Image (cartoon, rainbow, N blue to C red; front, side):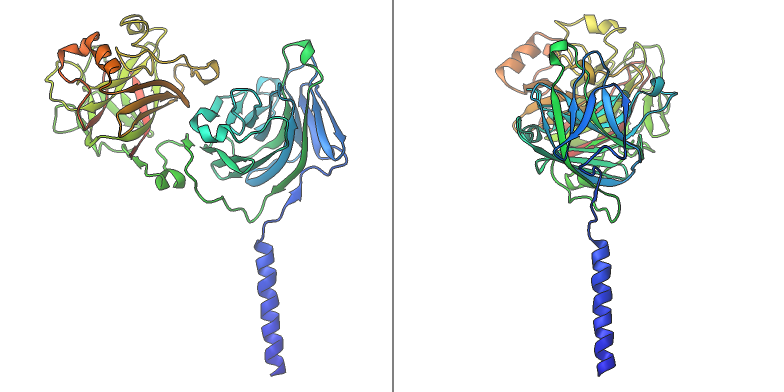
Length: 452
């Protein structure tokens, strides 16, 4: 009996020990006394320790400054608190690098934004000195309100595998799936300033802690996911109801517009990309447009597209193929165009044939410079069609068009456009998604749809 009791107690203790080992183990990234374990890179902003806080101070005529960890981190969960001057910009670098061969050692990599301005993009994800904005906070309006000026703000960053998630004051702000960099240092940024009177502004950091073992992502939530991994559906996207409209490998689910099968020429599937081959002709004179076999009414469509120089294409929705039109099939069109080098950008009325606009009907809002992509770089588009017929176009995380089908404003626009010859243009209850063959090389990938 005695031996049995000892055995039971031993087993219980072992179980408790194992459970304790599985608990979150936090380590201090900053010891509260000095800057041991850190090194300063690029600019010469002032970093010092006061009252168990790291204090960063702006200095005139200096580039962005970074207080970087000497150690590199791959997968981790980090929490910290910060208090920033309300007229100052900053950020937290993660998985970042500084190499002599890259812009003479310029720090580059993921940055979690600290933005006390009226733009309210705190918690968004920026790719410093590389690709620019990955997750602008226009994608998550509720998250824009998480940051509080003139207060301590608590950040949480989960960086596990290809997933980067952020919270500000407990509110989810960004969710990114990206495979660009797997490991790098963590750094605290003091942004460069443009005016000498901005010198002396401060940001303070405290309670900086990190986990690197027994990591587990927080449960899925409902905020928008930016996924740059080609033709990939993340767990959160699946939970939100997205499916792949194109599988990234075959022609399944698609056929030629007005045809029974996929075109034998004019389109190429290679390396996870669906591309229109350059033919030098006009609309649909080579392979022709392709349409989804499935039809949609209220939906959200996410898609990546890449232009070549001078190219023209489009993504159309509410396509029925009933108009017997010569050339491209008829439907509401998200314009895909090289605005600089294709002449169509200068036609139409007041720019209503430019990139991301509602073709020949509505000019898109001007995209902030930080969201503009060069020709040959992937863009991310969104078309949202709500059950009440409100429709939005988005480009690289920024809403550029908003309108309502059937409204007096919409009817007036149609009457003044090339579409006036088609009665009830764009007003069908359900239609197909179309990718246009305009004779120019344009590529698509990561075409995902969620029915509302």
